[in-house]
Image (cartoon, rainbow, N blue to C red; front, side, top):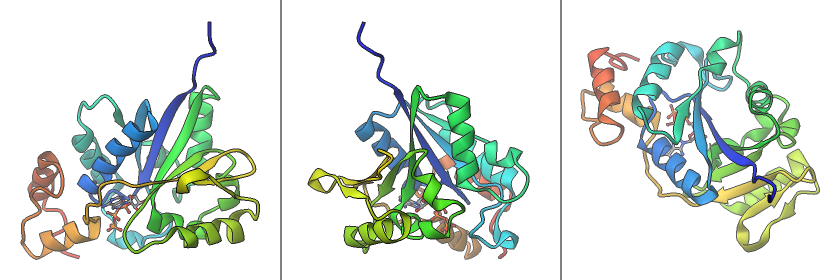
Amino acid sequence: MPPKKPQRLGLFGGTFNPIHYGHLRSAEEVAEALDLGQVWFIPAALPPHKSSSYVTSFETRLAMTRLAVGRQSRLAVSDVEGRRPGKSYTIDTLHHFREEFGPQRELYFILGMDSMLEIATWKDYRELFTLSHYVVLDRPGYDQDRLEEILRRQVHPDFQSLPAGEGFQHPSGFRVLVQDTTLLEISGTRIRNLVREGRSIRYLLPERVRRFILKNNLYRHR
Ligand code: ATP
């Protein structure tokens, strides 16, 4: 029998305050393009980069993420960051998934270009590239040269370019892939602002999440 191909798992971390179609559509397209068996949304309990006083509770963001994913078999939600005390660091989450799923699964951590360009502010960021592949969602206004410069200058000087502008490879063998996805100019900030101004958020996110936001009076005040 030929050796079994390792199943690929996508990990999509974020604040998800709230989750919206920008996240969902990207996850769907990345899963299809890279043949990921599953994509896990992992809401951060205490996002290290955001001022905690403005972030909706973990339980509320987790509930909205679960509502958005529903019974979609390829998408899943992990509460692992809520089960750890203190700030939510990706390095700890990657170690958790490595232990939970073992070497038979390849991990692909999905993040926006804006987040990747700030990777040097993440805890143990050099080690991050020895545990998982990365899928960077290309967004307008960012160029690949900047990504290359940041990876080589701040993470490891021996990152190699992959053919056809696919991305870069770390000496450990893990890759940073740049993925073009449908650009949806939606952000959590925009949705929260619209709610605060009493304006419509319909069609920016799943209807069940929209109803949850209105029913629970989220984002009415700063
Ligand atoms: P906020 O506006 O509150 O900062 P956000 O909508 O940008 O939130 P996050 O939960 O902070 O979302 O982001 C999680 C990840 O999803 C990040 O890596 C971010 O770059 C990416 N992301 C956010 N919005 C989009 C989008 N419209 N399309 C693709 N990726 C996105």
